[in-house]
Image (cartoon, rainbow, N blue to C red):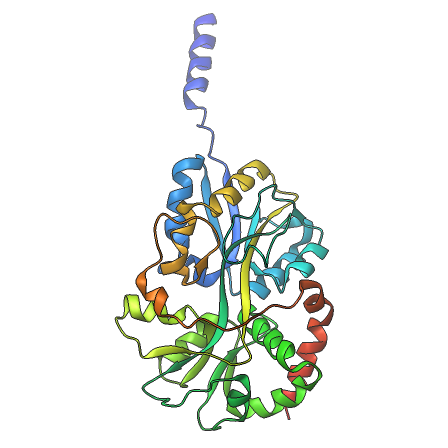
Length: 331
């Protein structure tokens, strides 16, 4: 009997499962996790050094990320939310779900524009109207020209209720026109082919030739120059300046993997992550990269002015601005 007990104990020890690696769950937007996006390579690089599994949860766009988080509240499965921008951080803080990162923002071209104890920036780029130069020989050189130009030459925009570029353009219009924005929206609506839920749908329609213009980023032409070897897609430089998007990530306060989450946040501003940003996310890196940016980035337009509204102003006015946009666009 004693021998049988020893044998059973030995068998039990032998069949005990090996401890599973911790899983870090990161909510982000769909284009980040796409095969051509930065997500797959970042996952490989982080897992090599963390002894963990990195799980991406892809949600349509940045505003949709925040909406999902609000619905889940304290029951969220996220450890980190990556893909909000500065227009959303005040609303995100108001949820009470985020913890201070404890990490200083590294020096970069946006150091004077962004520093926060909770949200850490990982990339940035000014918004721009991208046009097909083979279809438009005289692109707009200002918001005013875009609004008052040829209505047969359409633009594709994104919905500010679900998309950070859409919210960025909404903020751009308010930053330039203030109380006159509603009248400008009404006139611009005649040039809008469609409004999509997110950036991916809009840019896909644009590259398929559905319209000669789309709202995107100053950095978007770099993709076409590097990957497709063409410079026919270009950014229009606007006299009034360009609205700046800074994308950020934050840790969830109730995460069961808070130290692992902080490790990822620190990794996020280092070359293992940042090297993927210029030619996978097609934005400017907000942290350290291993070398220089590709020479095609030197050929991008350089806005004469960068616009950025205070996050609290956007948060307190966002719903009203959206109602204004909806009302003007429906006339």
